[in-house]
Image: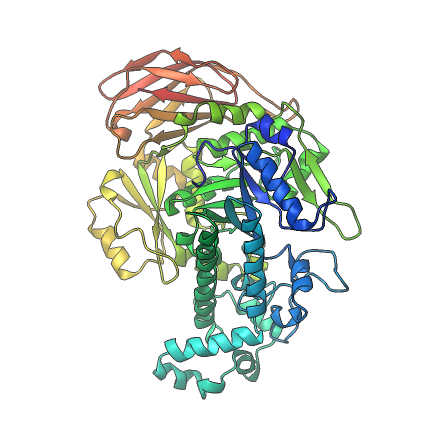
Length: 596
């Protein structure tokens, strides 16, 4: 079984006491076999980590590393240089890790290189043979991630040979003449670009343009896209040789177009996002889009902050604010991994830095999810509005960002597209919505089979970047089709289905059980009235929550309030023909209202 909405994950292997203190059910980042820390050979040490997790009832997620284990590749393959990503000048690409190993920098290895693929499968085998329950691919920025302005690749011999074969199969014979490819039997894409005056600098500056400006760039992306999808499906297939239905996740920033690969091979995502200190924003905004897009893909997310997100809290301990990160993820149906010990930074020649939580900082939030799984599992977002996601639009946005030096997978924040801005605006206004994915040649389409009649409005964007069939489907549907302009106009057009009176700065997240008209309505209430000086939340009292009948087609006659560390309380519930109103006597940082 994979990730559940009520699960509690620890980010990294820890003591059995920590597992039990959080009542953890899973582990996010299980280490690779590595040099011993307790006097054990690497594989035996990992087996001990797995055994300790299992003794605490914790599912162990082992990982295959696509960047952090570059040292292991150097040890594994004496010909490791043949597997490095190469730029247009045939220079090996170096990743962001600051340290060296055996006189070598942190090379970026090519996932199309046979030697490196063998090593990746060796990693997978060692992890699974150690007893891991789940498999995670980390950091999922393989060769297609090198096709950006930072790395300028890949032009290794393996990619050149693979692309040559790809063109033989896929390139229209009529295009061969106009592109002047010559005899494809001897075609080399690197030589082809160099002969046309492309430099490494120019290639890096233009590679993400969409539509493509570099000849054959789109075909090259398609080739790399096909190969990385095949690799991830092979990871999934191979893992099944070690157990029945082994779940697989990845640390893929799927909210960027070039990393939404092999969605079908993922059971869930294990992800890092940018989180900001309260002086910049109290309630995290961009993770909301991450959660909503995962919902649209039918996946759950086990999330945490990028390492640098915890550095301000290492310097100024404010667990109260991080508690809101945790509550927000669970409110949206996803899991924020317990931040017990978090790596924050590394500089060359300096020791690693760590954020350490204190006992009592977060445990009650995780116990809350474990005590009331029926408030989380089986529920999905209620939605009055649908937003159309176009993968083509995100690809276009990448091209527009060329001048700002897009860094591919190292950008762990959401793309600032109109869709993202609309998501954040509707969330801030407490308008429940859902994203529907309009696919392209890279990802499966979910729009043409979607039942749009369930939504009061469907929000599209201009330019839409949809194909003709998708545009026709939207135009013919008997729905209110609204084009994004400003948040105020959209909110006025769609109205409000759930509102709160008596308090400001509340985030309301209603959730339903799809297909069960008689199920309770769950509404999470997040209190954004945070004081960074005291690291606390203003207590609100006598809050009136109103749910319009139109959102779910029914009214409710009873209500129960749940909150971390408190016993459930029946609260006043009043129903009319058109709405249900509930009075909440007291509200802290997070509460869940159950309407029946």
